[in-house]
Amino acid sequence: MASEKQVQANRQNSIKSTGPRTAAGKAISSRNAIKTGIFARHLLLPDDDPEEFERLRRALYQEWRPVGVTEINQVERLAALFWRQRRFYRGESGLYCIFRKCAEGVGGVASAISKDGTETESFTRLLRMDGTVERSIALTIRLLQKLQQERKQRAGLASQSPAAQP
Image (tube, rainbow, N blue to C red; front, side, top):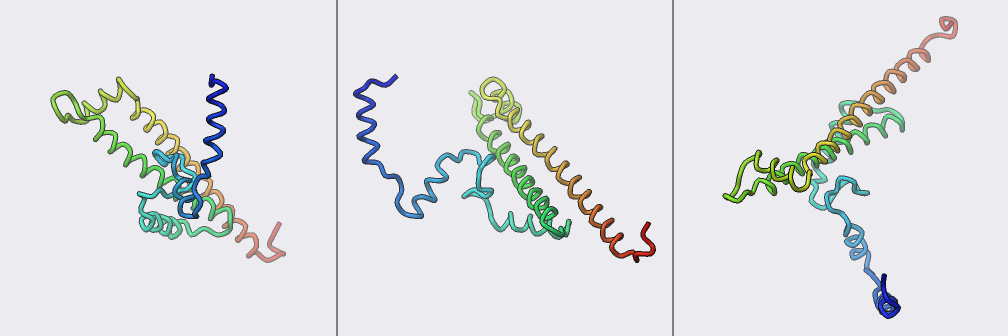
């Protein structure tokens, strides 16, 4: 618990602090809390390649050819999920680099897994998050397939003459 003197000092210091004033400064400070980017508000992080992400998006649009807001939303979701999954793979690679150091120098994968298992369980958390994303990808694909099938059925009904409809 802070003393009254500390509370007063904090109040005085807060008056002096105005935070970033320029648009650039505000943009930078808005990313201060980003650590992994796995749950980032903005999809692309400063070290992500926007051109690579755009290639992924274009490929998904080419593959799914969405029509309408709902299908487009699902293709955008797929792009975000696939991108997040790629980030997991980069994270896993980074974890191996961090944790494979052992007393004798640099060990292998077994050293990394052993050290992580006794200290942080980062691999376990990463695999759990990857599994969640994998299930979300499968669900999104099933939903997109269903939406497109329903759209084809509606188009088939619309193309039938009124006399041929039951």
